[in-house]
Amino acid sequence: PVDRVTMKEALERLSAFLDGDGTRAIYTPNAEIMMDALRDPQLADILRNADMLVPDGAGVVLASKILGRKLPERVPGFDLVKNSFSLCPTRRIRYFLLGGRPGVAEQAAINILKDHPGIEIAGCRHGYFSEEEEKDIIRDINSSRADILLVALGAPKQEKWIHRNRDNLNVKVCIGVGGSLDIFAGKTKLAPEFFRK
Ligand code: UDP
Image (tube, rainbow, N blue to C red; front, side):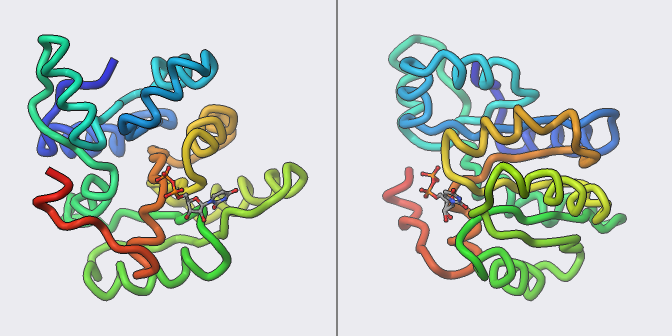
């Protein structure tokens, strides 16, 4: 059940989540994640229970057109996160970056802050940890008082991680962001806009 939102509407919802109660989960399924969900009932269930599902990629929008219920536009997770950095000029949103190889979240934080001094990075943590370390990681996220947790563990790991842990998190919003931290860190390049379209 992908939300029929434009990028602008997705940002408005994200903003409302920041002012609301509880911890909201946003996932950004692309065609691969959608296909995985057909074979993985647990993933399908997690996606159905999201607070917002945005169509990450042209394949999902094309499928919606073929099925006769066209989604308004692509809302890629990377762009949603990037646009959120300019969401609240009146207040500094605090982000926690979780995921990527060691050093990637820190480099992403440096690059993001260079371009968006109006936000705060409340903490960073690489994405290669054992189950035993999870308690400490959740404690660190909560004590950072972050508003938004970006989880970059790849799909479907990040969706499952968010689903399993959201009740223990104090953040307002968790977003599964796939390889986005690698892009912010300059380790991977986004495909050119014409190609993404
Ligand atoms: N990753 C991680 N922990 C893991 C597995 C993956 O932090 O146990 C990170 C990996 O370093 C990369 C991201 O998750 O930064 C996955 O990116 P990918 O582009 O494969 O994911 P997708 O966007 O396709 O979901």
